[in-house]
Length: 421
Image (spheres, rainbow, N blue to C red):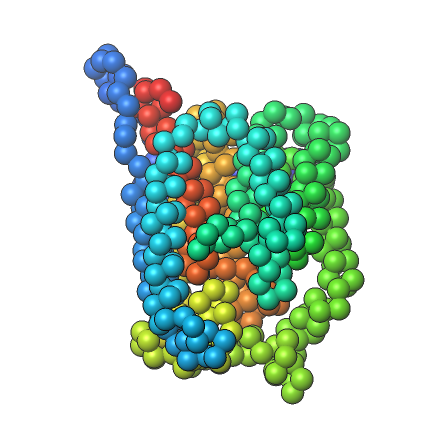
């Protein structure tokens, strides 16, 4: 089974790197020739992955426009009467600025420093996650206690935990390479850490974030080369655990039933309300959409149109073509990150490679879940569309993660041309 897993992992890496690799390249890295050809001192390459940068910029700017479009009519609802029509636009723009500054700072940090700080950052994020549950510290919205107020802004620690779990898992796999032979002995501490995160998140409750974090941890295990039999065993345990969580909660069970029959008289007005209106929005868009700003569902029919269901508004205003473009941009982003991770591993930088590929798993999986929910392929779950949906702390952490991947790419280029990191 381990041979099957290794073969599958190699094919997966080849698939993700194929379109990102120029024709004629066979290796996952391109070695510089300056030193070999001239005998000159090694030079450091300062370039970054332009494709990844521009895809990120396009998603951010398109998301800013769509957040404004989806939220412009919200003040017409008595619940949001105190807000101006540009309230969410201005706050989203402010968070984009703060996120950009934070990402620039994160880009200056070498990967060696991230590796040394991985455990400390994970502990800090756990403390913040616990603080959320303290009355008068955690902010309650729609019955969920997930935010910490920072003056006029709010921060969601569960978003930070996604990044710190990724760093911790990558560092753990590098330190515990015996995981391949002594799986349970080596992995149980990481499993216990993820379980602690799960308990804190379910207390908020935020099952969606816990699902993403569990997938990130499993992705790092798989990419780290864990034995296939053990990997599928722990995956089965996680599936059973999530099934038990759903079965033990009445309102979670109702969500599943509403997903299976959203158009029934009861579900269409209750648990299936968001799903049915999201499907109506996508259906109205047809192929070419009704035009930017022309959405009807955002006029207080579709709840959370600027956050969890932003993709439905995109589908209504830009149609099938817009949805395909969004999917294509995320697919390209994931492939670029996987390719950068393969380069790092080829250069024997295992931690950097696992981090880059882990970010790809994170962004790709969360985007997949959000898209599936908006298109009616998956049960309703409160996960935003990365880089596009309204949500300041999510945007900030996502940009920091991408900045780390860009730093990995910059260090790869430096090493391939004879430089140092």
